[in-house]
Image 1 (cartoon, helix red, strand yellow):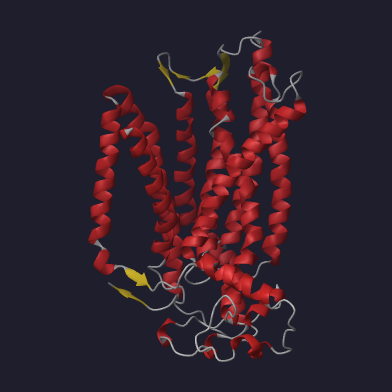
Image 2: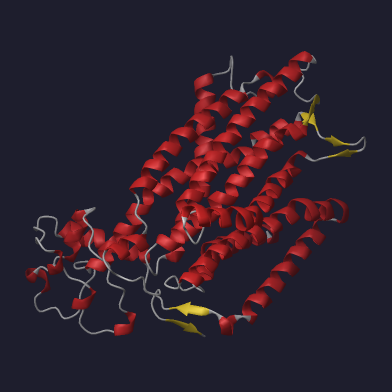
Length: 446
């Protein structure tokens, strides 16, 4: 019982931490200041770098300690590390910037849709200036009012939420958000909707990522994992190559690629968030192509050595042949994770950073769910005679599954390119209307 409680508390704490820490970190930078904006991009790079160092330590040092000294030592070291981290975090409280809370973003989104539905039969005014906006709100703290956003012509059905209907608002001093939303609230909801195509096309990368912890590990168990004559690499520890490629990619990107792309693209951040996501998606295609080719090579080695019907036998083919697929996915994750984090936090409406982080994290979980769905479909379609994913991998056609993922990833890349071409960054949209990006509400040091 104690173990289950501990595991559930760990899951609960991890969920709260992951959805908040990146958003809180970005709050420490002023997006309206170009220097701080560049520093925030660097923060995301090194934030992910140190996460990866922790992962590498977990799959190497902690695994060794648990195997040789016992799990109590492993859990104890983790507890001490968390305690030290908590003390360090709290020690900086007086230096942090804190943003005023603006209410639940989900409530705002729901209120806009409800208000628009209730006034679906009303005609929109020809001039958007006639719609209710933040400047029309009576009373309240002026400092807490949101930055006015320009009106956009997309998703105009939502604009009806900002129609100030005299029949429903006469005699009412306090605005009911379920009947009347400001045009700025409507535009913030539109910003979230515009992000959804990018969000949807990010899921496929994490479906590819899921293969690194499932079928790639299964491949490794059948291959020669020896280094020298005595040491054998545990199959699950191949993720060390995966994490290693991340640790290599982040500093290479920060120190080499960023300076080059700054000059070539004339962008102070180097690659834009969407360009980084695109690079990650391309690398995922390479990963699946490499995985398919290596699987063909593994099956040929099994056939040439008469091991097809012996699934537990070690095939005389070095496990290091799997490094390319781990490298491509690991490097892709470095671009993808940082690009997604930057995109969702920079492009989300003010006050919705935690929700935007949730959107980002949901692509990970949905990617794993879609992987399970694909496996179920492939099992059902290929049947038992010539299954792609057989219990005996030497009799299966795993390479066809990898090619399927490569094809789906390529189609997904096309959809992403269309979505990214259609998308206009928030800063550019505001600049076109002559509006300067403001800091996200009042902020100060506690």
